Image (cartoon, rainbow, N blue to C red; front, side, top):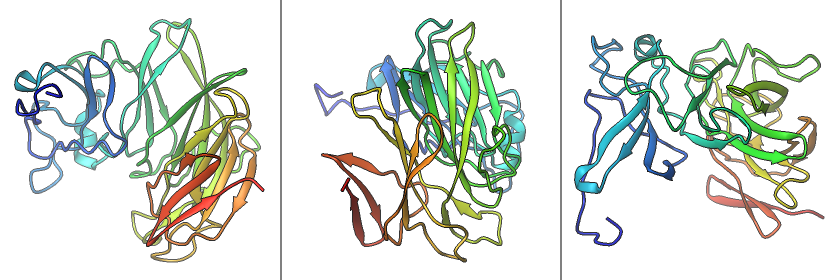
Length: 302
């Protein structure tokens, strides 16, 4: 309780595992917090007979001493996600308002196997399974999505951008650069409707930090940041990347600046070795700053 910090409480998932990672932080629309959970784990990857808070987007409400799960969304395929370790836990929920749409409030999150979900954030669907309003499959590789999306509004509409670790990629428009061996930054356009329509607008290869290129992890991408000049104009999506798979154990060292409406690479450069997977840039007083191993790297217009 922020008014009385001595008043505390807790909530935990019912099953072992089902971890609450939320690397991008918790989301809130003023009614508690919205979290994501990972896979159930019992010594080997198995699926429980009954759902117990794994593989879900969950709303927690109530004062700390009465914290409770008041709503939840889980895909109909949650059991298979448990077995395959393809959970929601490695991403967070981004709240998105779409004026003129029914519903108009959405929670956006990705599962590890590169399913991008748009759900009704005001009514997640408590324990029902399924019910997603949009489910886009972006790659046929498992363990290929691990970051938080960004959203921005321009004169051309509402947009979402997300990095995916590796392909084969799905849905990229003709002419897009989407090397299946490398990380790709994807752009989407959200059109109002009942419900919304989400269209892949562009795909741009950004290399990405690499771990063990010969293993199942392969390269894992950094998280994007978006900037505009006045809140709507000249959107640029910034993300750490590389020229390619630079070898086992290598990391990203470059900053990419990508046009948020077309996917065109506006900037690619710098020398900042040690940009790790999942790292998000920040924008500070006209500078783009990225944390790397043992250093901070800063870029500014010249």
